[in-house]
Image 1: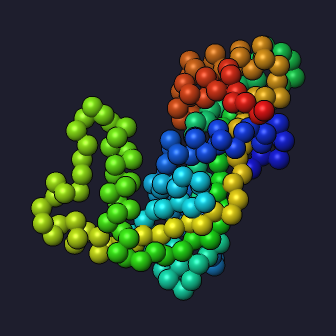
Image 2: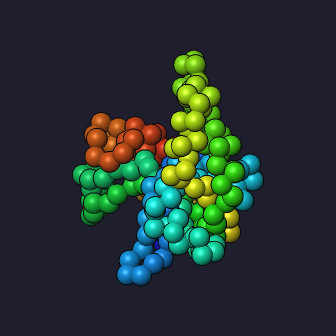
Length: 209
């Protein structure tokens, strides 16, 4: 997380809404000789006290949590973009990268296998509903026994969330005019991810009140 407090003062509700909409992140856990990572879709519950997800049974993180709950961090990121100093229209600036990141910190725990089908159905419904008016895909469209066979290869997991940290680095340390000049250039370029959304947020940063 960026240490400058001006980038860390966005209302928690904005960060939660961003994470719920994104619903995809990087799960990280300490390990020897190097940290373990998994890139996963997830679902936050209503009060953001936990996030549900699933892992391939052979994933090293899944192996580790079979021994018991483990400390973990789930990082949710994008949009992001490179910022050229020339775009500000003022002197003595340096290149930087603007981005949004939300981290959930807590204990990662294996869940009973009988919870898996409901989790998968909940996850698919979350994303399929965003594709309306396309008729939603549901698991009951699969032939008998197929999804049960596939589920043997994955396990349900829950991250019990103790803390949330977020960075909304949108140029809030610049004047409105300077930041908006840079935002206009971000919208025209394609260095990064979802630069149109980032430009819009740079133009009108989320509230800190």
